[in-house]
Every structure is written in structure tokens, then in C-alpha cells.
Image (tube, rainbow, N blue to C red; front, side, top):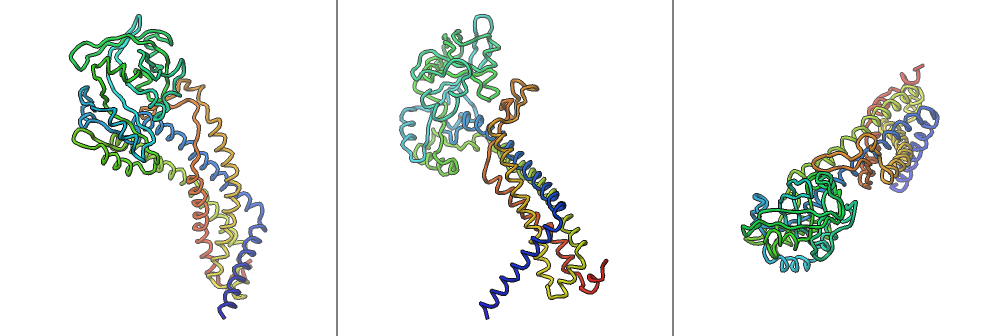
Length: 423
């Protein structure tokens, strides 16, 4: 009995599927128009999410990868005061311990200072960051952001790279000399001359406008802070397990004079900004919901109205209300699959163009534009996340099925006698 019942059930499903596909093919023009509209909405949604992801990836790269790192180690008072004297001691020992942790991908010390910097004719206030060039290459893409000249040498040699804005302001180029004057930690007036070996455009608006990087040992000498650093930036091997890695670091080096924080603890504002990424994606998905819902509902409702007599005959022949609902749902599902296939192909083509070529705004903003402290390139490129594509397809399919329930319910309530008499 169970085998015969199962076979009968399978046969009814196969019958409903075949009938649903036939019904769609009977009105090819309407089905194609509806599927095309849904496909265009899907492809535009994919392209919008791709462009949005590319923008947020740029912001994350500048604000987290370059500035914050995944995890920071610093003096407990430094995040509040940014004081010159709130430094980490025994930095080489700390780095050795951190390098040995299984979750560490890279670690790089940083020393921060402010100075009056100038060229032959002009001077301005600027931020100077001391870095270990070799370690910095592993932590951030700063070396790749040098647009003129070259990156810092691995050994201290009184070299400096300066931001594009600062270079323009001070009328300095590669090969020129920059003088820095500042108050040193020992009370003396620190001053020295440095060779400009590179000009960078990092995307960090503040650093590009008035920032400079030099070898950490050169800045230690200028500030009279031998062997010290204001912080150590860390990258985790697994970016999805930053919190667990931070606990690992706390157990290894945490203490009264050493504080360990994740990037979102260091900068809650950056975390809030990155959280808007998903919100914007859901907003874009709303486009698919609206277009798909109206398209499917209109198509299915028209189909029900036009086939009232036919549906009445089917009910008279024994098609139950539940099976009638499944018939309409299967039709909308086929429509969604057709739209999904077309939309995925078109959306993939648009995503490819955005990733490879991007959208060029150079005619209007040749130097890029700033957003949340990040200077975005005038050629905006996209980034593809598989999850975004999957969510978009599932949204299209889910909304199509839900939108068909109203027409399906109307079809299920039809009375065979009245439906058969309908003209």
C-alpha cells in the first residue's frame, strides 16, 4: 500500500509539474516579459551589491588593514591620551612572543609623532609614523601605494615617504630633502634632515594630506624613544576568528602595562560603518523583492483569470484545492528559475565588468573623493561575494513563490460549476 501510495503521489507531482510548465509555455510572450523584468532586476541587484562590496572592501583595506590591523597591542593609556610617553617597552621581546603564536600571520610595530615638517620654502604640521619596512609589507599594502619613487629601505637611512597632499603643499618631490622639528621625549628639540624617497597615495585622507612614514629607528632617534613603540599591529591567519586570536594574544602578552584590543574595540565608529554593508545589501535586495513580487503576482493572477474554466474542469475531475495551490506555485517556481538563469548570466557579466574595469568617475572627480576619512579612487571597482549572489537568487525564488500564494488561493477556492460556466 505504501509503495503504491508513494508511486501515486510521485505521479501526481509529475503531472502537476508537467501541467505547470505547459501553462507557462502557452503564454510565451507574457512569461518571457515577466521573466525578463525579473532577470533585469536580479542582474542590477547583483551589480549594485558588487559595486557596494567593492567600496566597502576599499574602506576596510584602508581603515583596518592599513591603520588598525586585526588586533592591536599598546600601552593601556595610549588609546585615550595618544601621549608621547605612553609606549610599549621591550618591543623586540614582545614581537618574538607574538610571532611565535600559532594564530599570528604578521606583526608590525608603529611609533607615532607630530612635527613641523618643511622643504626649502614652506613648512606645515604633519604626522610622522615610524614603521619597520620589512614587517610593514606583511601587515599592510602601504608599499604598493607608493606612486612615485620607492618604499623605505629595510635599514634606517634617514629616508621618508610623504603623502601626495603634503608633497604638493610643501612643493617636494622624490630626491628632495625634508626637515622635521619636534619636541623629543627627553625634553630636547628634536630636528633632523631626511631624504624623500617616495610619494604615496594610501587612501587615508589624513595621511595623504599631511602624513609621512619613516623607518621606526629613525623616528625613535628623533623622538628620543630608543627601542620603544606606541603600538604593535597584528594580522590573524584566520580573519573570521579575530576575537579568538585576540584572546590568544591577551594570554601571551596582556598585563598591567600592555593592552590588547580588536580593531572594532579600537575604533567602534569603523565597526558601525562596516555594519552598514549588510544593511545596504538588504536595501538593494528589496528591489528584487518588489519587482519579483509584482511581476509574479500579476502573471499568476492573469493566468488564473484566463484559465478559470480550465481550472474548474480540473477541479471537477478531482484536483483537490491543495493540488491546485501547488500547480500555481510550481508555475511561479518555473518562472523564477527561468528568470534566475537569465539574470545570473547577465549579472555575472556586469559583475565581471565592475571587477575588471569598474566605473570611471575621472571626468567629474579626477583626484577621487573622500568618504568616512577614506579617499576613494575615481575608478570604482566592484568585488564579488558568493554569499551575495546566493542570497539574491534565494530571495528571487522565495518571493516568487510567496507572491503566487494569493493567486493560488483564489484558484483553490473556485467552485467547479461556476468556473466552468465562466466565459
